[in-house]
Image (cartoon, rainbow, N blue to C red):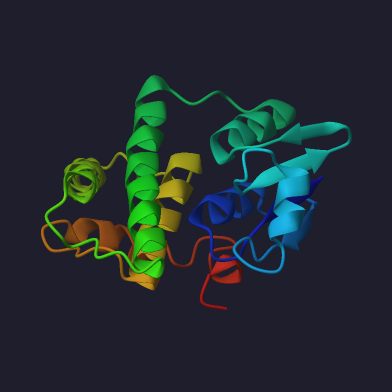
Length: 189
């Protein structure tokens, strides 16, 4: 199995955490620079991560997680866990939009409907996720917890949000920093 992605992507990190000690090759791409053509060749959606496993290509972290779970014969995620992933992905997608907009020279703090909606989605979802953490819904180190960890750590790494009012997300991150493969997948390396 070959995982194609970037060491700084929270979507890739969650798959690296999921794969843990499984045997796989990792191809680290600079998707906004010199490796853009490699991304085009490997994934028509122009997204990371993706995996190649024999003759099977799988293009999205959510689908990759299901593919890996199926191969391992893991129990499928519950509907509540699927909803957790939807909230995590909503925050992640909006934060990536803000980050790429900033890198493109756009003032994302302006009062503009598109950016107002991104900020609203981020804060509403983060408050809900923080309440879930407080209720113990992420107490087990499983795929949704790996996704939340990857998101929160990435948001701090990229400095894209303020955690005032949702400090339990940072506490969750801090309490899981010693989980397997977390240090090995740190985007700051």
